[in-house]
Image (tube, rainbow, N blue to C red; front, side, top):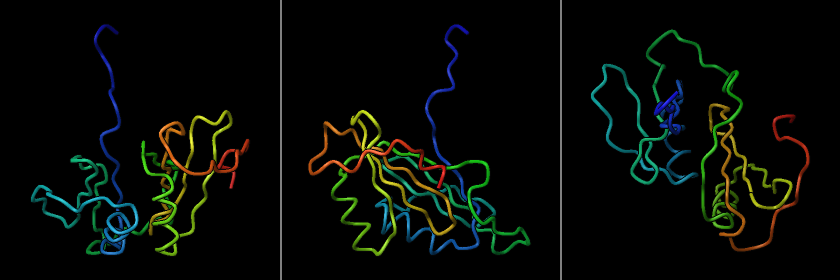
Length: 145
């Protein structure tokens, strides 16, 4: 396909009836920034990480669109992250339930947490760049839970 590439994931979009709670999760829990957003004719928010709007939120509460209970056929969304121990402490301090594990082979550490809409967020940490004790290695797929 000479020179053609899909590239890397730009953002994901969540349609929510819980906009304020969802913005709070991505700001206060994950540390994203609620930033600039085009002047769309519908309410929402764009959440930024390292200068990029990686999560787009659309407030569906003014509409009759029902709130979906989870992320449907999309099982989870993953971020390349850093600061494994700090994120575990942050999640614990916020009272968030999460699962941490090591991918078999030990090169990757992971944290899984759900947003207020039931979307599973996977945070991936390059083990060689992290401090602290390695989480338990798990051979099973978190998706089977």
